Picture 1 (cartoon, rainbow, N blue to C red):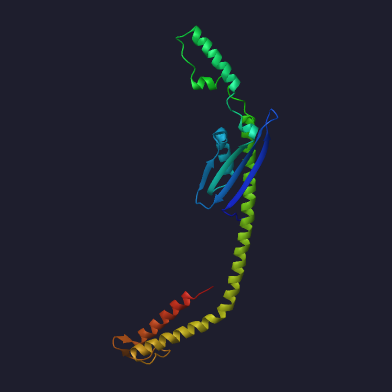
Picture 2: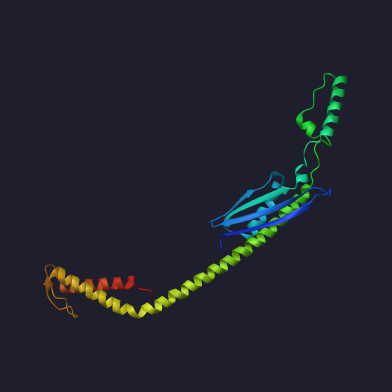
Length: 240
């Protein structure tokens, strides 16, 4: 089966948040163009970068060559987009605790940004669990790869049909031209003879090559040269 080297496929999944509010949409897009080797280029959010090795293995199992662009998009809903935002109430409570600690222990240092962000409750919980996102990316990737193979197979079948149609047309042209080849060769031979006659001012050599010589060129040499030119011409117009 012939497969086209170009193709496009995509797959999308809608995810609901565990809390019932928010959610996300996961999509995987694949684009392929011709290339001598298999070249995989990934563009994806960092929170699903862990999926790259598995997706790469899935693609290498199905494809042997071509440049493949893999684009992964995660679109969170408005509620989901707020996931990970700072919880002002938790921050206020933490600030109160920090002041109390500093009053009791003035020599203690203030909290750093990383410590604040890691404090339980400071960051709102994500609307969709990371494991759910990763599973959705892999599922979309598997579906997109299957669809891509189907697209390339359909385009390859169209290409094969076009090539077969062209071959059939060429065969018909060859069949029409082949009977004309002997006549073309004879005309070309006559043209060579006439040009030599005109250039050398001689009568064309007979079929037996009889005759003397013209300067340093014998009639036999002229006849042989004509045969060579006719042979070369016959090879050049050979359409078999």
